[in-house]
Amino acid sequence: MHKTLEVTEARRLLTGGPVVLVTTAWHGKKNVMPAIYVVPLSFEPPLIGLAVHPARHTHDMIRFSEEFALNIPGRDLIHHVQYLGSLTGAEYDKFELTQLPTFKARKVEAPLIEGCVGYIECGLDDALRVGDHTLFIGRVVAAQVESEAFQETWLLSEDDLKPLHYLGLNYYSILGSRLEARVPRPAEEEPEKTLEEAVREDLELGREEQEKRREEEEQLKREEAEGS
Image (cartoon, rainbow, N blue to C red; front, top):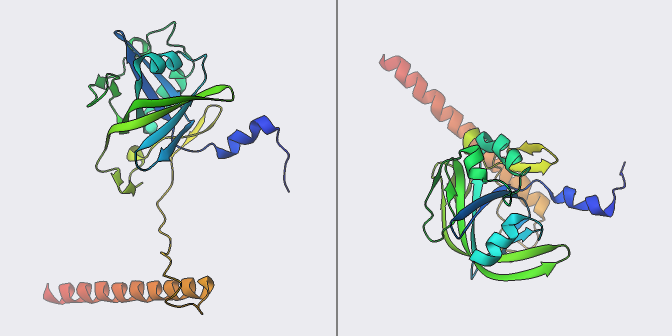
C-alpha cells in the first residue's frame, strides 16, 4: 500500500547517501558544516556539486575563498555531525567548541578533520542558483581515503571504516555489506540466452565452485590430521 507524501518531502526518499563535513577557510577563520546535497557531476574534468542554502555561513565562506573540502566521517563522528549542524559558524567557532583535531590539506586552505574515512579537496569552478540553494561546482584537486576502507569501491569490511549515511532528522546508518552483481556479457555472444537463464547458469557455476572449494578444504584437513 502506497502512502502519499507532500512534494516537499520527496527529497527524503533520496536521502541515504554519505553525509559529508564541509570545511572552509577564509581570512584566518575556519568553519565546518554537515551536508548531504552532494553529487558527482563530471568524470573529466572531475567535478562535484555541493548545494548550500545562502543563509548558511558556509555559503559565503565558499563564495569568498573559492574552495572547500569534503570530509567523509565514519560512525565514530555521528554525534559531532549532528551537533555541528545545530550551530552557525557566523556566531560560533565550531572547531573551538568541538575540539576536533585537524590536519593540513594538500591543495586547499580548508582544514581536514582527523578520524574521517575519506577526503576530497575542491577548487570552486562555478556557482549556480538552483531554487532556494546555490549549487557550488567544485573541481577536485586532491583526494585521499583510508586504504583499509576503500579499494575501487567502499569495502565495507569493518563498521568503523564505513562512511556514515544520513537518513533524515537525527537518524543515521552505515551500510551492511558489499554485494557483487553479475557482469553482463556482450549481447552478440549469446543472443538467444535470456538474462534469467544466464544468471541461473552463473549461480549454478557459483555453487559448483563453492562445493569444490569445500571438498578441497576437507581434503586438506584430512591430510593434516593424518600427518599429525
